[in-house]
Every structure is written in structure tokens, then in C-alpha cells.
Length: 80
Image 1: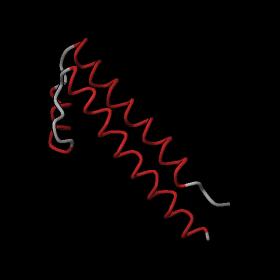
Image 2 (image 1 turned 120 degrees about the vertical axis):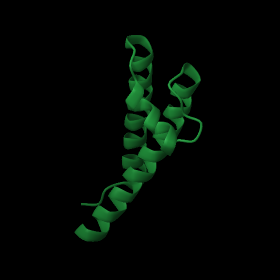
Image 3 (image 1 turned 90 degrees about the vertical axis):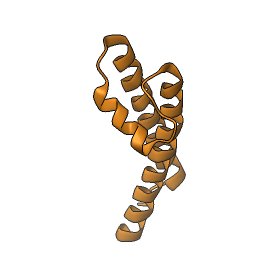
């Protein structure tokens, strides 16, 4: 069975992008979020702010998509 690289990439991109968005909004509403500042070291322009949440959503989607695509590609190569 072959995995669809684009489908897995989209699924993981959407999931990770939304996770970063929700975690950032949660940190804004509840407080804290000192650990979320570390994402700014990986995601250019990210901060714990409403604009940073959208930037995190975009970077999270890209990061998740690439990770999912590579995972599916690797699975297809090894299961081949």
C-alpha cells in the first residue's frame, strides 16, 4: 500500500498549523506562554500575539506539510 504524499502532507500541515494557532491563543487568553517564545527561534516572525498566532499557523502548516510529505515518501520507499 502506498501513502499519498500530498494528502498526508496536507493533513499534517493543517493539524500542526491549527495546533500552533490554538496553543498561541491559549497562551494569550490564559497567560503564561513563556515556552511558546521558543517557537520564534524556529518560525521567523512568530511571537505570542494575535499576529504571531497567524504567522505560527502559516509556518506550522508549512512545517507539517513538509514533515508529512517526507514521512509518506520515506514510508513508500521502505515499504516499496
